[in-house]
Image (tube, rainbow, N blue to C red):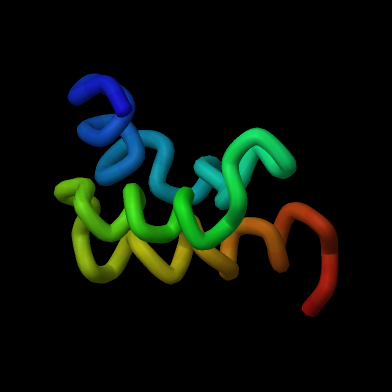
Length: 60
């Protein structure tokens, strides 16, 4: 992921970025492994992996 995207995901876009696996080209396990290597703030990780999708899809 480009550094600009990581920086934006940690700040301006932290409530906008969603998990996406590009399945079947990239399996979720691969995406998660790569995501764990990024310098994403601990408080932003659950937003990207779950909370933003719950809010966007109205699942609360």
